[in-house]
Image 1 (cartoon, rainbow, N blue to C red):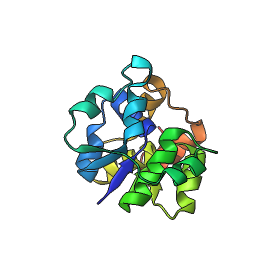
Image 2 (cartoon, rainbow, N blue to C red):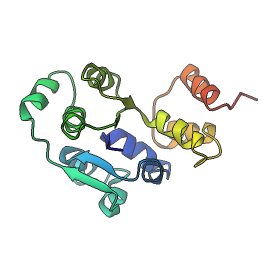
Image 3 (cartoon, rainbow, N blue to C red):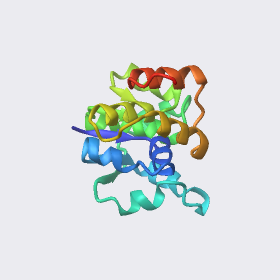
Length: 164
């Protein structure tokens, strides 16, 4: 399975100590070189920078189709644009991307897209984690992940975790 990730899923999962879920679910992970640069932007190592640097299961790639990237960055940031272009180049089975506009663009190219919440649901289904609810709360509290109460409840329902 070929899986490409954008920056935010890496930083979000790393911030809550769950980056290894990607390795356990997908084995190998591919990122665009610009995603690596975003993880280290401004000389500040964002959550996940150290883990990605040490992960032999994450491969970094230069994106070849610069014309596609230039077309995509009209509406998206550089990381999203290059992640989509890389997913197309590698004929990825899955693109992990959280931003709404990026997801819309990726779907227009026929890419299969999920986000960090989808990764958590998949990890629960694979019995890699016991509960989604505490990790979703950590995403909100520790990673600054914006999530409405309605979406949080929906994710917990999808995970089979009903409110108390």
